[in-house]
Image 1 (cartoon, rainbow, N blue to C red):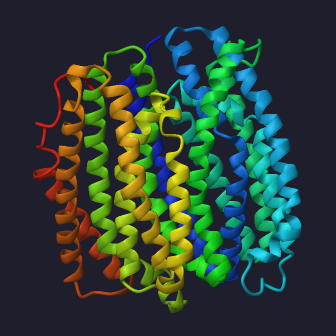
Image 2 (image 1 turned 180 degrees about the vertical axis):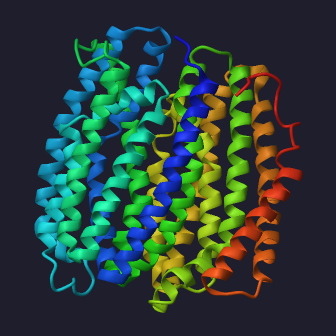
Length: 511
């Protein structure tokens, strides 16, 4: 069965953009209330727990991604019995993983205090709060998180987005009330557990409604289990690299600079992830569709579709980059600077975060297509090499550059290790399998990427200049600068360098 790529992609993007818009607003309000009512130390605790449990999430090993990718072929063949067998296998493995995560998480309890530089807030029971976070992390493994694989494999991320939107809004409203009325961090954490259960129940309900004939049953054949395990081994190495890239950052900052420094870095990183979530919607909406077309259409058609999707994503990335450069520091001054000026870094920090954003987001289309093609084993050592280099640079550079050193080390790893490696794998192992195509697709791709870098840099500098000459400050100034920057950047994008550059795209392969 060939899925409707365009229809599902548009449906996923609309639902995803709605979700991300609301999920930018509510976490922002949540983080603001945290700063005002509890203080930066509590934000630091949230970041620390998230990083520790992020490391524990390695136990998932990437089974979800491997199983979803394995489902693309039986979905294309409309083989529901095989899909059900994959689902049964996934459920069994997830329950084992949940048990392992819980046991390993418990074993870390005696060492928690060593991960914090300085004192924790006096009313905080560090071990009890960590235990609640651990329960929240493991619940999904024992409930219905595995059912989400069906939605992803059938390119119905719009359903996921609707569930996340509705449940998250309810969760944030509940936690807002708890923060305002009780100012109790423990109650806040307990609320997240309740809504984790609600999310899983909603996923189960929706998958039963959409796919009533598909439920966990049957036994997966040995050769297919071996293929999943082989993919999992490669994905596990990728997960180690991603955990090192972010979770290790927070751990190094906590051990070297303390909880307040984590809160400062977390504020800047929050803006990065909030804006990055807009771009993520594009990539996440396309992955399953790519997985289906890779198995049903030609390489030439898929390259055309890949380049058109890349152009679409670069439009969004260029606009977001320009807006971030223009508004990053003014936003931070208005958001936290008026209440706690010590949480605002110097101007170089947001500039580096903008570079970090562009470099990382510009590689995501490569990652998306490579994941859809199942090319994990071919570059399985890349994240390990990148993660080790990143961690070593973190430890050395934080001593003389502080938080800026953490950002620079990650950018370095992306630019000089991850991007060259993963692009070489995608083109060599999928687009250029035939000798007559050698180098053709690669040249077209990199020609467009270079053009996009130059255009985005010019757009960002011009947009920053337009915002900088506006003398207003405070919230009114931020609003005026934002409107001017948004309209100016959008006008330049619409009329110039990306929308009119079609010569890089081969014919065919409609998105």
